[in-house]
Image (cartoon, rainbow, N blue to C red; front, side, top):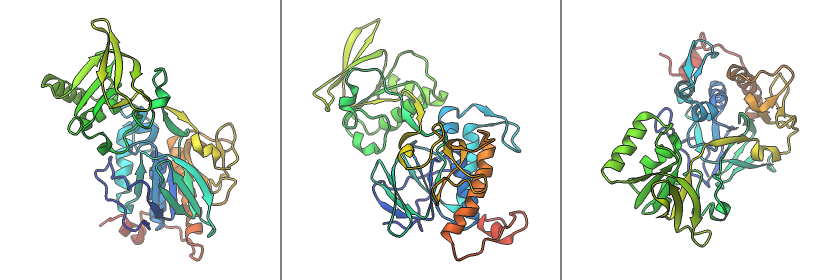
Length: 362
């Protein structure tokens, strides 16, 4: 069991270390969603000495901002005339460094129940259990779900030979891998898996990639020196006695149909948004959104809050800055649940030496 007192250190500002999956953790607040609003909630909670763990299905913080439009300019963040989704994520990660939150990345929150002690127990799809008196749902429009390629009987291989995310790189050591896609995820995992796999083959329907140019250049250099393979082709079918894969059948104009032997197939065709398992948490819903009050942004269930795009109230504006405001008010009430015996004293970071000390201000 981990009590949250010594979470993993950040591997980098934008790529924090992820805590071991399958363990039991105890903390003050579990935040579902590591997008901008979830990250800012860490800051507001940290000012009040409230510790946070964050759970996100993606393999990095930033949510929709970093995953869907990392280079798209945002114009309505206070004090930033223009900022990209990735830049905003990086700045928020830098801002919360003093509070050292624990991240559980590549994990989906699937179940929530009340404990005999009156706290909440959240379970993820990786078997991680997190106990806390407060749950803050900051999941944007819901959880990201992978877009599955239209390949016959692909479901029969899922979880054994077909994977839509890389949770543990070691499971692919010494394997023959086919990766499909042309975006950042496909290129990133191609570059990361080449050193440990027996062979990596990247497949894309056209010789034009949406990934970062330096990643594309690295991939082409590896192909040039024979360290991996690249095929511009369509994926037609999977072969092998399910759920064990033996080959992927490709097709293009030059070669017609041909097979690539492989042990694992990783299609990265992007993500779609769904409310997901949060809909099964027993909360009142309004058109797939979670109604909250506008004083604390608490749901119909005590101790469970919803902030950001996933919540609903009269006059709601789906803006990042609105989510920041909601996170600040949520943190005030969360403090009262975490420290029921303490009096909440409101302070300003500009004048409070106590808050400045927490932030490492000299």
